[in-house]
Image (tube, rainbow, N blue to C red):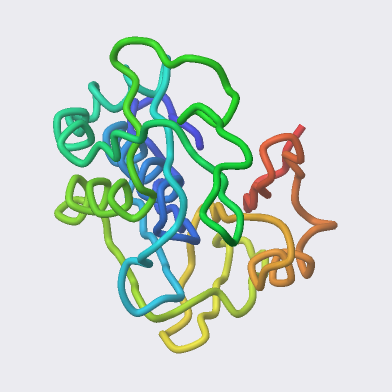
Length: 198
């Protein structure tokens, strides 16, 4: 993203693939700093289910700055010890609620993934464009930006596309422009830009 001499941001339209926790969190901060994020989610609504997620250390402070910490505390899973039992319902092992990660600090919050997703969606739905029931079909680089085709929706052009990498359609779509983009492999994402990178 560039900021020319007049101080106005360019390359502001950003597509994020996935509306679980990371996508809406990124969208929140991008909007906060003047960008226009769009989140596309394959599922027709927010996905339910998933494991508990811990908000610890810096994540607690970030949640507070986002204005979602109070809601996260209300949704706290408040897990205690975990017991593993056999077919006779006899305890064979126990583990602390942090699954061996050590004791949490005062202020840590543990909540279910879908509760966190709902909280993040509520915090961003009025400022972020969400597209549910669709996904990225292909990406191609052009002088105008990243040309994105969707499985169902009309094609659109974005300045940056951020998505999960792995055994997903997003990674397959990114393969077509991999040689013409700069990899940020440590962050498990690809940066697509119409401008040369150094």
